[in-house]
Image (tube, rainbow, N blue to C red; front, side):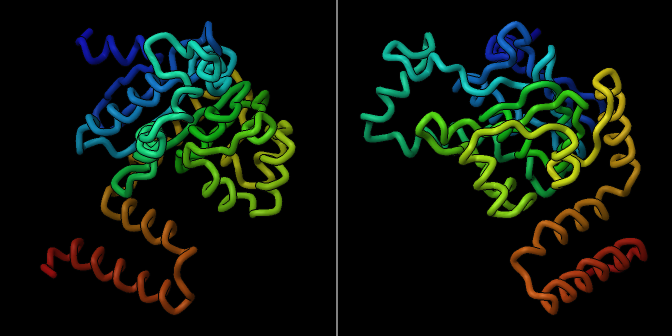
Amino acid sequence: MSDQAAEWAEAGVRLELAGELATVTLCRPERRNAQSPAMWRALAAIGRELPGTVRVALLRAEGLSFSAGLNRQAFTPEGIPGERSFIDLAKSDDADEVIAEYQEGFLWWRRPDLVSIAAVQGHAVGAGFQLALACDLRVVAEDVQFAMKETALGLVPDLTGTKPLVDLVGPARALEICGTGRWVGAEEAARTGLANLVVPAEELDAAASELATALLAAPRSALIETKALLQGVGGRTLDEQRAAERAAQLRRLRDLAGVGE
């Protein structure tokens, strides 16, 4: 194991590459994959280090829970060993910059040149919920329990989860989910669009791998163009969207015909 891989593993994350597929695993099951700034830095570093050949990124977790959320020790005066206490962070002049760095571990899953899949089982709470929301697609086990507990703790979700949550379920339901901190199970997740697929827990890894394989079967350029078209819908009128469709299709036709721009 390289020094970098050992550092990531110590933070609770493992990266495996198999051709065009990258698998990122949260690997602290004894801690229910509780998150820390070290884990967020490791996730951000993995995003920076991914080879350009990667087309699909699969996020999974070991153990009974996907992630129980932030390690609450961060809020104690002593903080997580080796990290700044969030109490000290609140008093600092660079807090905005530090939180922006934390968010980097949640951003690259949305990159236009790949498709990301989260395979989620058990509890996905707070930061765990937001990490699942960072991915393009979610395959969940029947025992999944999502919850956004930040507001109940006097905080807000700040790891890039608010936009995808609203995009998926709408502002009213998103407010209700965040404001109450209640649990969202598999049936509701599927019904509201939080989950693309619900499977028995023992079939989760196989189902996520099957979806990754299906995505890898599509030509890369066509998949990238399709993702861009769909992601841009919210900011375009119908006329703007159909113009974007025409432009993308012409690029694909010219590419297939071997015709230059």
